[in-house]
Length: 388
Ligand SMILES: [Zn+2]
Image (cartoon, rainbow, N blue to C red; front, side, top):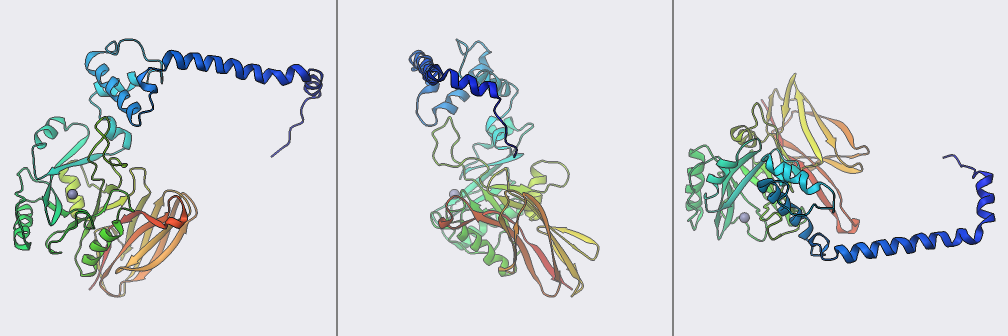
């Protein structure tokens, strides 16, 4: 840093006019106070200035929707607060955009409801540039589960493992996906552990007991199942509706590696194959976990089937805040840990394909005060080891 010398003339000027110079800032502040008070008196009753929590954004959206449907003059007098923002938002609505999905940066959105498919019809009419995937949350007193990929209603009425197995079979026979939700205290999953591929490993903010949901998933992995982890925000409300919880859409966010077209089949096929990872938010962190063995490439969900002892190179491509811990778990145990000291970094790890098992990756670190402990920022599905 270089130090600048104040010009001599300015120094003299400040010295020579010391009395009026001291009063000048007071005069400016007083004038500003008068202007500010006048504005507050004139605009004090304006709805956008009321301190009522969610009112600001809700009111903007409401105004924009009326502009989109009834034209730019529908709002009456022009809006001076946040100039043109309401008109910009109205233009997005008029073009058929979804402000919420656009705001959070999602490419698709799965919408489920409890024990009903009454929303399927509306989803079909709204499915356009933005992909909406309909589903049902099969909801019982002993556990909830998401079902995707069906156009039929799934009867939720069951009271025991045998009854739930009939539901799972019903879904699988029709090519759908079945995924127990939030297997943790609150609304835990109390049915048996097998017979489905996907589990909701992360619901809402990490600290809401998601270490237990991860343990539920990992238990199935340790038992040799190719269980797929997905994340779901379980978002029940978006402003201007009454806000029911402090998190929104896409927190957490499931990233899906879709081969070919981004459509419902492409997304669900990729989920079924475990070609996914979960991050706390649509902005990341981004964590791609891949492997090479005998000239072949693998992504999460794949199994490396090669001769026993073959060397495997795992690669972690990370994009997110620096100083986060990147961890690899082998068969449920911590195997490797490195710290990303940059916001974009790749790491390689070597392994001999000596035993069947799996390797999966996570990003962890502190959010807020360190004494609150670490949270998981992202986790990937495993790559499976299958020596011949
Ligand atoms: Zn639920």
